[in-house]
Length: 228
Image 1 (cartoon, helix red, strand yellow):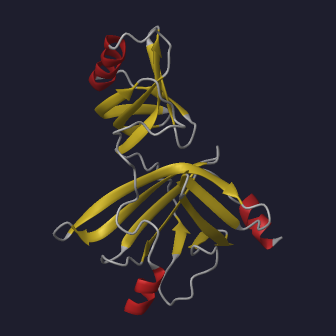
Image 2 (image 1 turned 180 degrees about the vertical axis):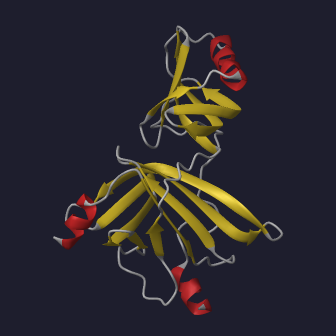
């Protein structure tokens, strides 16, 4: 019942952040934002990599409450990309291990709710179904199933022209990959990659980029414990 109270007390969107251990870097700064439509976006900043510089990686997907445990939340960003957290207070999420248990360690695995919402806008690599008809373009992102309007700036116009150049019928959805940035319910194209005719979100196009968290996306808890 306590976990359900925590969940019901959530006012969304909400951003949680914190610095957690990293098996092969100085630490990870994590920012996780939950949206009320059960989607999420996450930014992991690996500290002190690439010659001492920090490196950002992004994830997005859907979150759900685990039915038999009201205070456990599951975040899914791909078929084999599942993370779980436990609500341990109104303002705190705790990372769980692969066995869905709390991590026995003196190191920090908690994310604290922030006063301001971070939209985790990117830019990030995206994959989804693009369509253009009349004077508007839209994009349904594969991992969340969420629909965004494409901003028709110079990059948006370039994407529209590439769509039309391949002879696609107006309004017909085509799988597209590109780097984009979120602003409210609009999506701004940063760099177009490719169209993949004849495939959909359910099929990985041959030759397409594989999106991964980068480095130890699922933490190597044993290595971290031994280093502690």
